[in-house]
Length: 249
Length: 136
Image 1 (cartoon, rainbow over the protein chains, first blue to last red):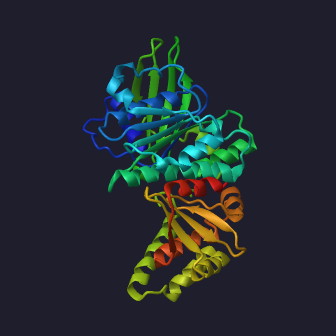
Image 2 (image 1 turned 90 degrees about the horizontal axis):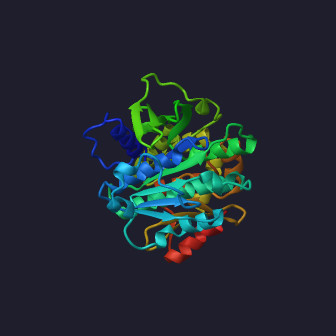
Image 3 (image 1 turned 120 degrees about the vertical axis):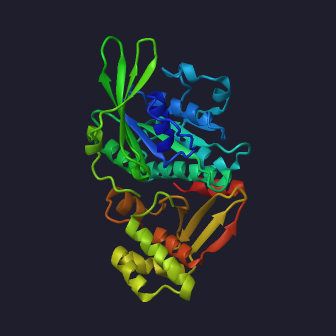
């Protein structure tokens, strides 16, 4: 999934040309505080994958999007939108049931599985084993879709998890657990762009599949999105350093 | 197993797989390496493999999951595509404390994959859903 996201951002900044591979890369976890553009990036990735001529995109979220995310107007071709299938599991139990029974579904095999707002399914202190099982099942479901799609095909996976400024111990442990299941991670950090503009920095750490990268994404007051490649120095985002032990599973 | 084990363990497992293909058993030095990396879990895992406690369950959809009958007779579920076991040791030592790489059940699954010795069971797609749902 890290590679799909890289294509989305490189396309936005016109820095990437000739990247027509449909490789989606390893499962990616998108981390950021409320309102820093996680949903917008997920939706952009959905539109990107929907335009790749492969299977549909499965978009899981607790509640319907209230409006289309900023900056996507230009790419809103109806054919692409039709390929994005939304599902709204209302509870953790329902999300588990959806993932556990994903192999019973008939019809075209999804090429990309997206989940927005994982934190909404981790409320009520589900305990570390439940949180890990949810993360592991997301990977297992995507792996099954990839297997069904045929040899050398994969189904991408991208999950957004909200981080809190002042996380307590339970939240930190939960996040560390979920992070262990995702080889690639992407941090979003909002910054004040001034005059009604909203901006956020995107740090992509794609694990073994490629180099780290950084972008700046800015929304004009009218919703227009611009992406610029970030500074070249690879800075450690602050969220990263605070995540504590982060062994890979 | 895209998201799985540290490279050194992956390497050991693939060397073991090659050796098993060649001489139909795990060479002693590999057993020692297993013991060195995993401590007492290695012996317990080999015991589970010997007792054929590992079952690979698959449904017509192609989805698969492992079940391991532990030494106490309890059945645990291990996912086939990534690192997860439903046993308490996995929750405590691997997830919470981060002081082990895996539990004996997952190690038994990996060893049985190397030795190609696990039991196979076919179930319906619906039954597989129930198996995945049961485990919590």
